[in-house]
Image (cartoon, rainbow, N blue to C red; front, side, top):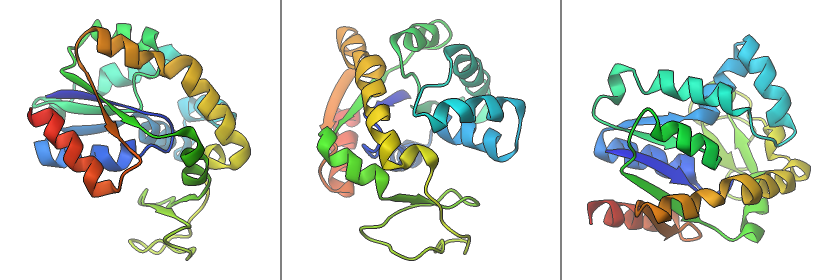
Length: 206
């Protein structure tokens, strides 16, 4: 099974992607995680990507497309994969169609006014990648590995509004794109995590 997760920043795509990938035993490919790894390792790609991400903008198509094309050729994608964070534009979706077929695009829908609080309250672990939210966890230390948590530059409130504007302009059209191909189904991402997972599984199994 080859899946795409759509939805605005803060909709919970990463959390749900991990659960669904584990359930169906397919590779979870997060382009955001791949880019942040490049940034942490101070690579040339990481330096170029950081400038875009810090402004809440999308990394250029050519960079992301080549990265994804290389990633899905790996052995762990033989039985399928779940793309989290790609494609983000119709141009990227058309490029993706040129080298692989997608079975379903799952759209996780959340009202924008709920997203600002979700995103700006998020804290990340720089070492193991664990994510927390200040509404449920106020400590500054990661429960999994003990590293000091931080707020990503693109999670700061002043950047969030720009990220949502970019999503509306460039990524939201993907909903119509995959709907026209009969490959889209939408779930309510404003429900609790377990309920969202159940709805996604119900849709995929159907």
